[in-house]
Image 1 (cartoon, helix red, strand yellow):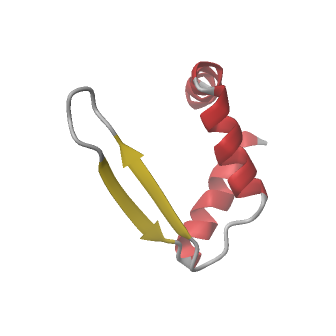
Image 2 (cartoon, rainbow, N blue to C red):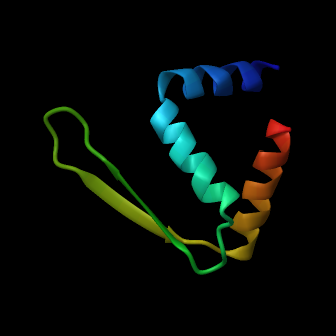
Length: 69
């Protein structure tokens, strides 16, 4: 229950990001897909990294999705 409460708070605080993430995962992430993220802290240069999705990542995404119900 604690995790669900935190998830609901996150969605409430960041509805656009949550909707984007949900749409990407709902559309199906295939092995080989590249996910890139950039973080910009106040007063600092942006930091960007990426990952190429592996089968084990897809299994993790599915397990997390199953937690959501």
